[in-house]
Length: 482
Image 1 (cartoon, rainbow, N blue to C red):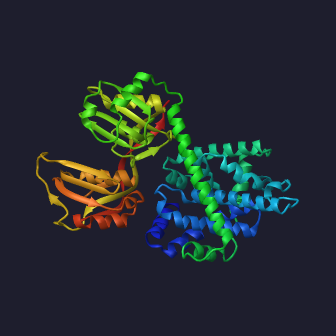
Image 2: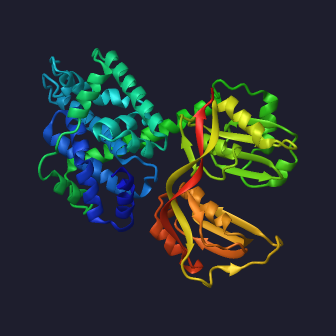
Image 3: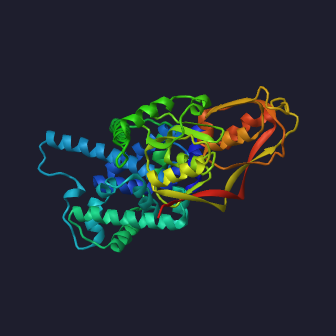
């Protein structure tokens, strides 16, 4: 069920499909309503918040990336909407000079674990990191298995189990800070049994009509939507600023002024292997202090990149062209990096040692059975796939998330582009070994959102198609260095 959440989101975003949205509402309605009800302690307001959250989903559907964990996204959005609702209610209560606050946070504790936890749960969850919160939502709110959680978080099953256990311990610590001391097992049982209750009868129909059909909603619901969207935008901006500060500080990394000056000599926006050729022999990894655009290039065994993720950096060090074939058995830093390896020889090994030293991880190549897309020949002799020559003369290619153009190149470049931007393994089964000229365009979101139907439409002039399947392929397993 987890795996097709984003398929339904893409289906709704592409064609405003009411059945797709109704399926999402039915699947996640109780989670959203229970969270809202727990936070605001008012049935009517909880229903308004639930409606607002799904309207926000309808508006944001086209912008959600393929790696979005929808249940965790909805839970976080509910938090924002509930916070805005509570703020508005407090203001109204002050204006009316009421003698008490109608908030579950002020209800007296009882002897039962859930009655102690319920008023504090969502505040405690909000103080966790994004991945920890997602792991707990999947495990205890949606009752997913370790295998399902591992698939969503793109990590091994044992790592997913450890992640849930660590996240649960962090949640327990948050409750201790709030004066509730319970064992982690008791917290797990209480949250799993009580956190999601059935939503009121008929609410799904109302929510779907308002969000998917665009039915008129009341002024208070519109206020909730605007308030939640404001908080979401502010949170995103704040995180961007914090990330930039973390990168600039480069905690734990010593970089001299001379190194930064040398860094400036090869850090730039664009592809120019000549710059790499002119650099003195060196191997360095820097926090990306100057920009967040991602580029990578190589020539004669030398390699460099700017603004790349930690996963991309590790993949490059171990000879993997994309991160689509990476399995994480440990967490990687969220910051971005610039790197260079310009030795006369031995660059991969030297960069691997630098990755171990700077990121604290190593990697190994293992065969794993996984979902893939096969690039196959659907119709031969199509005009968009023009034969090239057998030599490298006049050979070039260019690519971005929405375009690929090649002259006198093998199909491997197209396969790599599809895999890189879709972040999904693609295997060439066309059988072609010769060179081609081709020019292919699509909507960037189609590929990054893994909208294979739309990509196949773009492949029609080439006589090619992408077909889903399973295969045992070499995967890069990233582990914590010992």
